[in-house]
Length: 83
Image (cartoon, rainbow, N blue to C red; front, top):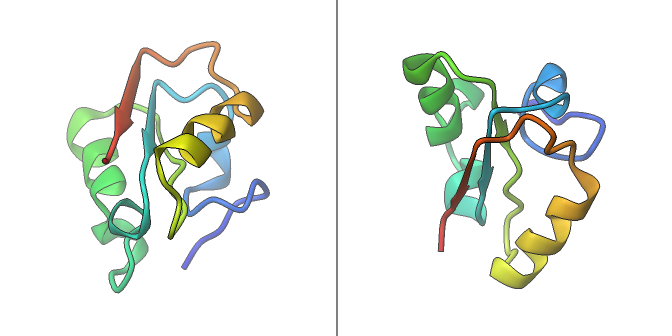
């Protein structure tokens, strides 16, 4: 499992100005699968966009949206929330 400096399961380079930010819980985080098998990773590969997997196991929507305040969103065009 790859964890970046923000404690998120995403590549380190995904923290800088991602085009897509994906919020969610353990399903989006990718519990039980390899890094490249998470759906944010598959989205990155198929869309050719910079995707940040900003999900955290056990987080709900309230804590997920609070996490947004600590992220670089200047180039974010899409926000996906797994509810």
